[in-house]
Amino acid sequence: MKPLALIITAVTLIAGYTHTDISVAQPLLDKAALGQQLYFDTRLSANRSESCATCHAPSAGFADPRDNAAQGAVSLGDDGHSLGDRNTPTATYAMFSPDFQRTKGGIYKGGQFHDGRAKNLQQQAGGPPLNPIEMGMPSMAAVVERLKEIPLYRTNFTALYGADVFKQPEQAYSAMTDSIAAFERTELFAPFDSKYDRFLRGEYQLTPEEDLGRTLFFSQQFTNCNQCHQLKTSPRAKGETFTNYEYHNIGVPVNQQARTVNGVSPDFIDQGLFDNPAVSDPNQAGKFKVSTLRNVAVTGPYMHNGVFKDLRTVVLFYNKYNSRNPARQINPETGQPWAAPEIASTISLKELESGPALNDQRIDALVAFMKTLTDQRYEALLD
Image (cartoon, rainbow, N blue to C red; front, side, top):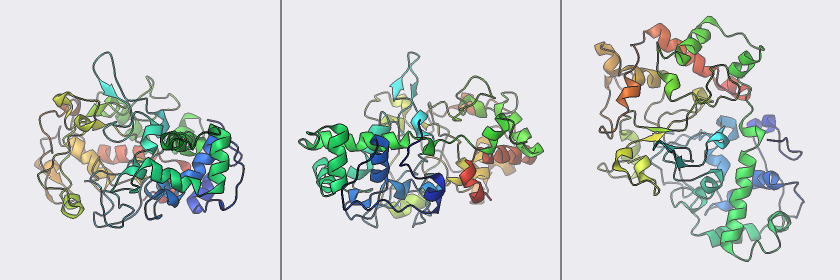
């Protein structure tokens, strides 16, 4: 990831980005600079009201900060009323997810979206513009016509992708998604400058609570967090993304509030990984990609459907699998017992039930540690 002369600074992004006046042709240095322009361009949505940055806002950990009738659990579309059924994940550190694959051991991993249906960042970038409940464009050709309206795009697409790039809509659309993916692979999306990273470099001293949380997180004796949320072999390895990019069913319940307002049938069952066209094994139903914990403290609501509002609730949800205390079987956000899982038959009980119950001190310590995974520019957003 090389720095780009024309990439705007993180400080500018946080403050609020106004893209370049593109009514005239201007040369851009490379694909990532073009991708930056496209990432913030609302012209790529049907009503010219949404861009990639609308749902992956630089000021909010590259997640969707907007409130709506589903209290931000899912995202509002360009048409002003459509709501999705899954929570928008952060785009930070997404570049490190491997291409979607099935390993020799039969384990699915990688890809983009919660079910891995996009093989890589480029495929992911091509999804939202054509999704009727997201950016709502009717076809690749319609998107390309929008691109051709802009002198800057005409000039730079041909310079970077060849004089014939606009001859076929599919070719121009692929160039667009390639450049957006190139932007998402820049250092802006993965600065590795959180308190945890600074701790590893000897630039920050963890508080006793944060250090306890770190010990618990990486210890298989006290928790099982790192079974799924550790990629590197060493707990002190630099560049840790805090996900192994595999898929698990952890028993997340339906987000009834979102379903009430988004028009999805109450009888609908989100099959997760099994909805991926590349997956035919029904034993994958209900599994979702293990999310990165980078910036997790500032990118709620949580789980694939945004069903939990608070990060501490997430830890309590995991803890319920190992606690016999009746009080731990109550969702603190509803005051009711934890709701039933949407799909119960494929829950990863081996991973979920492999640790002891945690007391409040240790629960709070884990939350404190996860807050140290917040990029420095977002630390002001922490509670």
